[in-house]
Image (cartoon, rainbow, N blue to C red; front, side):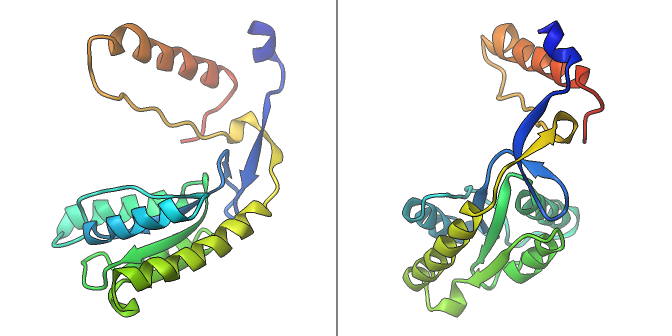
Length: 189
């Protein structure tokens, strides 16, 4: 491993319009409210190459709570492992899909916004978002990976929760991996 650390290390990545590099090429179906999470989940079941997440936020939030959620939504969409985003809202939530979509679009990615209420309900929205997602996944498949310098790799770590074994195995493994990444040069934050 020491010899490897003294050599220039590169990886195959997807360069995004903002210059950052991802190792995945997902299309994100981003629900802006808990009411849209099941619709987003259904689209990801129908369209291979899409991902989503389930959350309990997006409505009746104010102040710093609202700001934190808005930054989190935008950050997920701007993640370099995401090729493009379909922002899915109900239509009446505090975090309007078009506002989140506009913020994500600033990084140059393809972004579409869809409102369940504007499309006549859940079933019509699933059909419409699925069509958009299929096209976006096709476009994503045309992006070629390129050789990138290790210094462009962004690595996130998370403690998965404390249990009887995390302190014995998982946390030391993450620590050692982090040490190896840092030894490669200046990390990006």
